[in-house]
Image (cartoon, rainbow, N blue to C red; front, side, top):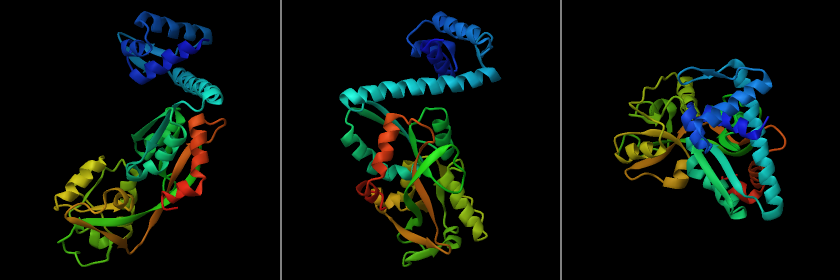
Length: 300
């Protein structure tokens, strides 16, 4: 069994197409197909369903793919660790972040980049479900996500801050003189919120239900920029955490009013796979979040 055969398999899973997978591995399509065929023969298993084009993996193939991803991840980590012992950490840090953490993610990535200038940091805006999947299939080193409400499996968690909620609404709107507003009152405003696949949205829906309200926002988006654009128009309101105030302040024409009745918060933190050894990038990130000066950047 050769590492290149496992790379062919992982590339095929990524591209879902023999030609594109071969191109990503810088080999010809017959070379890639032959390598996967040799892997099947060595293992005595049918891995890939074949027809005129790629048709997916067999159940056995899915199991083999999981091992292939783990082995390739471990090999990459070994290379990164060995190089780091000679020259300092290099390679990549692959970080998934839920959208509500994006305004404050630099509190983590900036000190990491200062200490490890040869590492390329990739930050992806992902749902909490996608972060869990990325940690499971070794495509992410770490994630920034909620630590409550929905179960996290096979991870180690490091709390960073508590997310608290504000109604962002027009400065000349009905709550212009208020210092606080209730969730039930917030439901009466024309809302622009994140899409239901986002855990933040599911959290907000739950709190509205607690006060006997089912919300039906007219605008839904998975883009933080789109949310802010609608707030600036003055026509829409939104429920957002304090992290948006940290980055954007109050968008022009709007103000942020603290939500109460109930006043709630949710823990947000760093998650890494619960396995040893961690990738060198994840290991260094965990060390970083243990420092008081880094936690202070999150208000911790």
